[in-house]
Length: 367
Ligand code: NAD
Image (cartoon, rainbow, N blue to C red; front, side, top):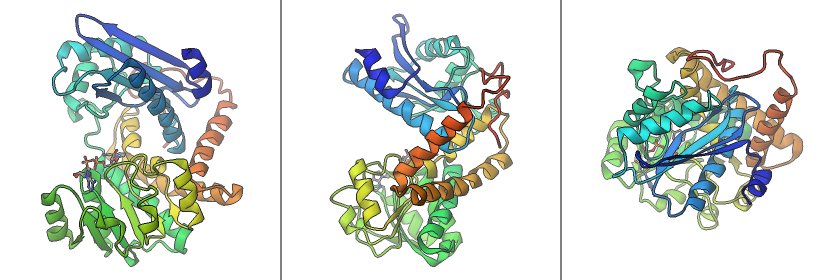
């Protein structure tokens, strides 16, 4: 049964990790290591069933293969889930037990933070294995990725404006920014610096006030963000906000934001395309976070990180070329770019092979 599933999803390896004393029940999924060791965060969540946890880790790890490939990294796709409640079930023993399992894979899987996990948890994992990113800055970690994600989103925006309008003058256009958290607020700041008109919304009123006071944004209601006369809709909160209900309301001809899984489904992605809206594929435009942690493996350097964020412009431009070349919606073109890159690099048969790093700083990220 499980192998049948893996035939469809294309996973290489799935590891069930169990330690009764530490209360650890975790699953590590390595999807594809053609480009390099599998990198992807660990999520801690009170899954209602083991099947639900397995489903989630298979879906998320496959997504990481595509994201890392489009980002131009020499990194494959993987992910881990820990079954448990992050509010009540965390302990040093749990994370150290998990770290031992990560270590046992010899670098085929490298972990990082995801939902429910913070930098302090990663410190425990780091005690047991070096195959971890997103550790504290004092250990050579990269810190909060959000400003990089926002800057990368700006690079993707310029490529997307170019595709839609033939120019990249960010300040010439108006924006509807949904969500003013770590990434959204920074993105608003970058837009303001370029002189743009910005509409904002958030469930947190303090954040809305800040965007209005500091960046001259215009506040609108939570549901009104879909109706404002903005040139660009920028989802920076939750996934699934582009759906059957919201799409007909959008005036924007460009969709570009940092949120994950923006399209409710593929059919909506096709409909976006039919309406002549240029959609910046979410996992390509928000790759700043994963680029930042990948750089930790190479010895973190802020300047290199900023340079790497600028490659997002070219990744998006390439996706739009493929979309035009093959006459497919941009969300499909992003997948195709990933598959083409994995196919091309996989065929190289490099003489040294691409094996696990022996120690921190051995993986080449290509930038
Ligand atoms: P965050 O939690 O700091 O911010 C999200 C914000 O959205 C919060 O301020 C929240 O109040 C607001 N929000 C929630 N529901 C809303 C709604 N219905 N309407 C309006 N606002 C709402 O998260 P973040 O780190 O800024 O990430 C934002 C998005 O970008 C997420 O989807 C995340 O997965 C994605 N992302 C983030 C990074 C990163 O580096 N942080 C990298 C890649 C992708």
